[in-house]
Image 1 (cartoon, helix red, strand yellow):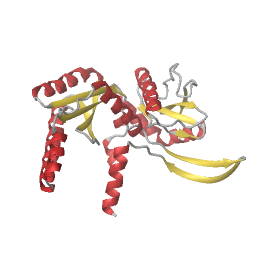
Image 2 (cartoon, rainbow over the protein chains, first blue to last red; image 1 turned 60 degrees about the vertical axis):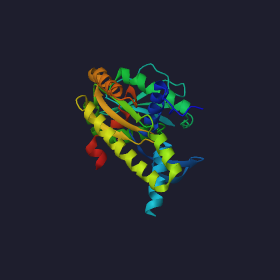
Image 3 (tube, rainbow over the protein chains, first blue to last red; image 1 turned 90 degrees about the vertical axis):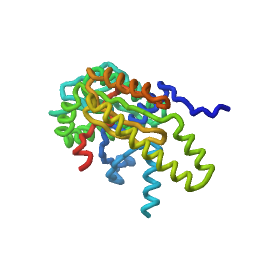
Image 4 (cartoon, rainbow over the protein chains, first blue to last red; image 1 turned 60 degrees about the horizontal axis):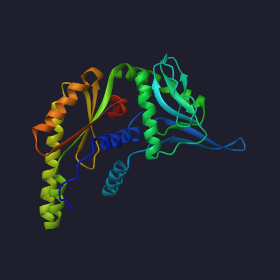
Length: 68
Length: 218
């Protein structure tokens, strides 16, 4: 096996970065939702849905552990 | 359920592009901005494939109109919920749409060829050796960020350093007319050093710059 570092394929890297930006960038909407069963409103939730790439979540979890 | 794609100017019309769910995209308008949406039966799952399809639709939309992409997958229960959200933010979104007109995002990835190998080798020797190598790698990383930031300063209107596990990632907001010069400058920087790997991704819609710096830090 070669010891040479793995070279990036430009196209693959750019695609990964684009997908990362699609789910990690962009306008974040703060939404509210009412859950209903048989037209009866049951629960009112204030939602702030944020999806982040795994490495950002990893960093947040690590920081949380350190400060705990 | 309504899947949200992008904030656009109030007079923009959704082009004849199918959405992720196969339905035609629609435009919900307020006085200062509009949102391009698609009615869908279920919340899309953000798999790599679906994210890629969403990205393709967003990039197609961006060819037709200035826009602020909305993070995928954002859904709201009804059109009236979308309108309420739009009315709550339209002034800020309109301002940012004007600021970003004619600008696109590129992401520059750069890495010294053997920085990870040095760390791996150091981790096999001793803890002190590893920590010293790690500190050196961080200094090298900071120097690389500063060098590239300086390099693109003439063309990038805004710069953001993005999180990265490998090497560095810098998002730049660049005028479409300046894209080629920035790319050439970065590739020239790569050729000036033996061990440099650089990838310039984009141009894309301004995913990393939908909020201006001041609002983001507030």
